[in-house]
Length: 315
Image (tube, rainbow, N blue to C red):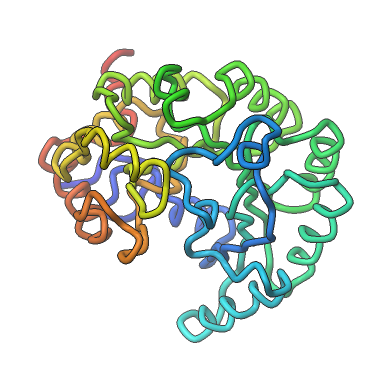
């Protein structure tokens, strides 16, 4: 069967990050995850305490470098490993753990510029919160964006305000939307994180989050399945209330329905999760990441569908 999706040269029926990078840079590009030792305003009391309930002590940077090491040492350790697999490639420094704009701009510049000065680096990915980017930081990011490939990642997770309070997100939809507007006014690419399977959410809730994002000027999305990790407030809630987690089949069904509602030009930076096995409480099927990815591909062929198909049908 011929693949009808135009942003693909493989069997993938959604706009993969690999496809986007190869077309943008004309060669293999790797992201290298870094831990610059930042904190979070939702941990230190600025907007809240203890962080989002699903977040680990590593600030969702389980596969990032060791924060006790200089940032360039973290970067080059991973780069050396990648060079053994790909002798010719480019790299993007991914400031992943915690909130990576939550510091004085002077400190941010020192860290970002250090990575940009490394050989074969073509850009930066910076994960942060919409309430943690100052006006001074926006000005610096605008300048940075003019001389390198820059992506800012913002966590939304859900548009359901009841769920937002439950997960202790501690920022509003209005704050989130405003920051997207501020970044896009400066022509900075935005990638948004969402989580499927949050406690007590329905399939309708998860589709509503996608519909909301599809109407915003975003360039990419990361779709996660909720991971219940050890030693998190989420684990405590799960042990107490035993809320339902999605089965693999339910997750795949929801993800495909979400993809059908997304503009085809939006890049899918992630479509499942890959938590560390030793840290995972539930769901156990998440540890088989490539099985999930393959099953999504198979089901999309079976349903004869692709990213944005429902949008085409509605036009």
